[in-house]
Image (tube, rainbow, N blue to C red; front, side, top):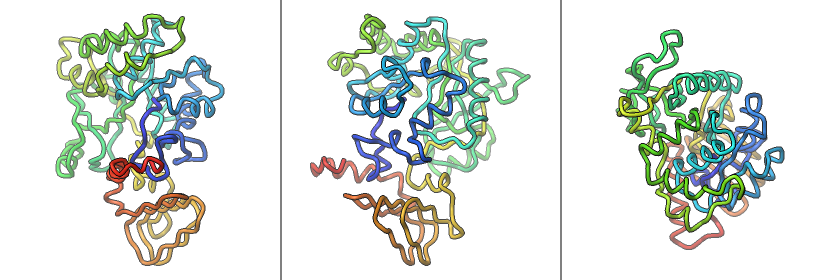
Length: 356
């Protein structure tokens, strides 16, 4: 999944070139990192990317080995359930008895080999148990920026990392996050899924019947028509996440449909949800600063700095995020880095579209 505007990474991330198309976490773009990470398991001909129409050209340029027909272009963003429904339909029409992994294109993973081992386990569960499988990351702190998965009974006594999902929890406040982590029964929800295409299509029909019917009609001429999608028809689809629309109700009523399993793992995962989160990926100096670009720091601690071209000089500051680009400068407390989208919203209200 390579859609989204990446507003929390403004001013570097813009609508025309969002976070997933930028080399934020490494020398490659996040999209390129995602494809490279899975490449030892899945050849380019079997990788499908769903993206927005404004980003399709950049995706094709960044992934020249992918067949052009494997890039499905949404005419308008409608959240993750329609996006996943499209990809599942495309794959199922070409190979009905197949399984698929759903990977966001804007995550960072420090241990790619460990990630691939976990994905292999998830594929085995999805194919053997006909389950909807999600990956849960062992929490290292009481994080308020992630959703949580409560583990239930073991799904396989021979594989202690595999459980049936008891419930999904939305992003908690700090007090609740501490309680969830202390219980030892909760994992971070990574938003990574594995399932057979027939199973997710059936789950969509059960939990989001209007969406499933609309997507079936919208894609009736696939693959003869390529992956073409009409704007007027797509605009009518409900905007709903796969978590809210399918995973949560499926986990809540396992006796009435497909069960939901979670594979617990620790492969150095981050959803890179804010500038402050990048400090963990870039590494810190002795004063806790994380720097990318041309910067001089004096008597400065616990600060994340990105300098595009100009020298950024900081003196006597603490716990900030500073991002300098040719046409915009962001300065905010690190604790409020997730709120940067509020700046983008205000710029939009002011009509400053060139800065978006």
